[in-house]
Length: 632
Image (cartoon, rainbow, N blue to C red):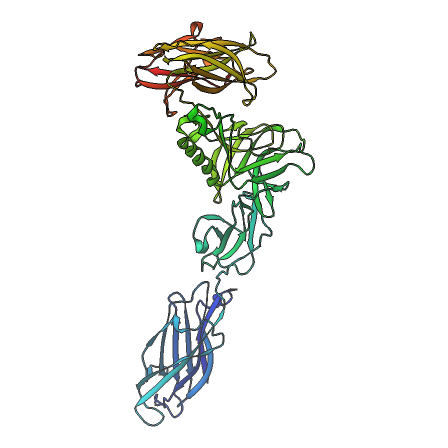
């Protein structure tokens, strides 16, 4: 009788697992040459083979007995006795223990004893899906074999196969983002599909292979890139970390637009900035309510002259400062400007703008102005506005911007950059047009030593101009003549005043020019005529009879440890500033005027070195009067 005994413990539950990698072992053949050993008669040996496999957690058993069989030889059994399913990895080792013996019911004969074989998990091919021979294992024992010898041989042939798949993940698939999106705008990225492994979750990163910042987890995230950005997603689970999937979000880029670039197309970002663009390139940004703009508006235009603008106000020139010509303002404006046309729509509230410009365009006029100051020291140029290097941002009002304009409503813009593109951000704009950046220089002429001051101040009440001058010394002087012009080009002599001839004292002169206010600005020249007929000319100077309301005098001149300042007909003395400049135009002292009784105040000069200074009065109602002061 043939008996089979098969024991498989804790195995078949694993076999039922779905989507796992299953390792199976089976004994395909057994062999023995054992003869009759029990002595009860011919042909009644009972050869038996036992085997177990253990992976450290689970074992399977095999037992086969052939009753009443001598010399069994090789028998095919193909009996699977170990089947185990794994989630992520198979076992590192499998331990096979087996033996062969003759079972006579009373004891055992020709027993090999328990033989142990360690099978490395790495020796198994994970792609071997059909049973294949792993090895044939052989053992011997003392006893009668079929050839009459005294050694019995036993063997088993072990096969294995690996079926199914580990519960590992593969990279997800990320849906592409079409087109080019607005900067700082919410975009939803979605990943799905392919194989989801045991306990896996999709992780999103800013860099490949889990580098950079963790942006979120799950099948989707929301991003708002400023520039074109690639995002990475992978599955991380119990069994493995998958490779990356990647998606690139293309974002409209910021540029320095070429001359004449214009557009009415914009996209709006999360912060309410409207980015005006041409194609995929942003040329200008604005923040505010444009709902009142008609269809097709607002329209933004960027201009670039290629080089900066420069002009001399005149009527004199900078080179003429050596002969006391007055060039007035020297103006510089950046090559790049902007304009926003609302199409007649009424602004709603205030607006902020971002003007994209190259830093070299700003530094070009800063360097040019600095070089101009150094090139014409006789003009005593200084910056009109007390900003760093005299630079300011400005815009015009009421009409579309046409460069150059040089000055207008000024803004203290914050400087920053985005994606490597520089910009200035102007806040609190109440209406549109356009603007740029500029610098204005004002001359402070170094008057001859015989002339301490020369000024012209309007008297609005009496419809006249008070022209005054002071000499600190005179030699061979005959008389003075005063010329007046309404355009700085055509001159008319209006008065002759006798001179002292010889003097080493301070002498004050003046005339009252009764003018008809057909023009608001008047120019004056002072001609000093010597006894021998030689003429020395000073000026021209100008006065604005609409705006100029504050006149001041200083005495004594020359001064010692202090000087007295007289403010005549002051309307806003508390808003006036008195500035002392040396001959190089450097500010050495500044006094903020307080409300003074009768407009008189005394200024301490003890901290100022001896020398020549130019004293300027600055007031919102005037454009500045200058008096030459000698400090002894």
